[in-house]
Length: 124
Image (cartoon, rainbow, N blue to C red; front, top):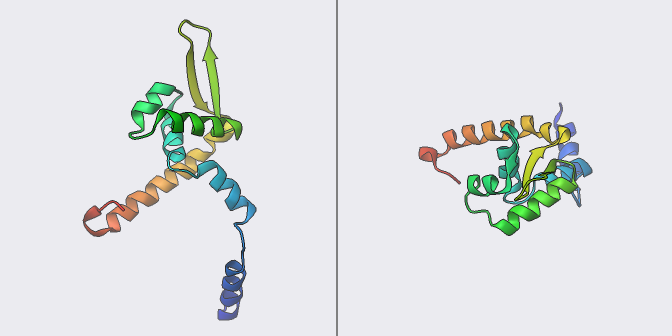
């Protein structure tokens, strides 16, 4: 790539007034403090609400409910209600949601490398 091509590419990127649609769509799913942590828990297996709440330190019941509803509405998470007393509800990744597994593992690997590069392995 030439310097002219690099300059033109930088100017094109700098001229963006809003994120490209594919980035916007990704942020809609992964954006927010808790969504990636919720998805990370669901990679391994379906979980009940309280399992998720215990596994994700600091998340409130309200925020967990809100994010699960958003992820369900986006077709990333499914919600299954079992006809029991008391009712049991499990959350799981949909087939489409499972495709995020590679993305999340890549983010985790990047984070591991980043921590190793940071002075004394400090968290950001």
